[in-house]
Image 1: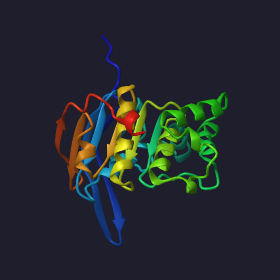
Image 2 (image 1 turned 135 degrees about the horizontal axis):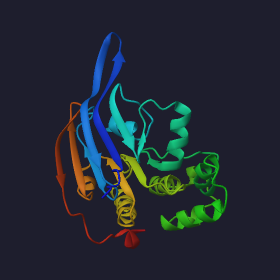
Image 3 (image 1 turned 45 degrees about the horizontal axis):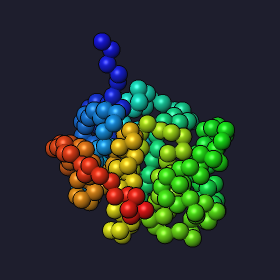
Length: 241
């Protein structure tokens, strides 16, 4: 019987950064497999390599050695243009600082990735549905500067979901939010995971990591520990949102 490939396969990946005359290792022989349907939290101290690993999975950075395969696509050796096109189709990315376009309305920010990917049909309707899903449809005509941090992050998640990616990557999605808004975002991520989205999330917050189905701990560019847990069975996003 043929077994479908995993969502992510990382095989003995090394990444080094040049600083002056020194090579600084960021990842040191990391190997990792993530299946579709998992919600994985990557944790560890600053400088341990967790954000570097996430950037490799997104095709934003490239490995010096080893292979990175995401959704059946081998990223190693792809051109920048090919990576950008692949990323727009296959992966949704949520950043700590939202990175919304300041001159576009909330609705236009969500429509933008659909335009870039050529998914023009019914894009306004889909954008409104996504904004409703994350609880900010009433802000569709506002500019990002008119929103709170938590509202902006919800818009960023809607934008990340615009092209129906099977994989959502989140880099410190609650790191720039207060505890109340952070809890709303984590509840929303859990709702998305329960609906079938595969999530890989970098976080420094142990309470946020505790909501994931699997936690990967990193130190000095290596994976040092893994654990699995049963997350909260009931989402509270509807109550808070």
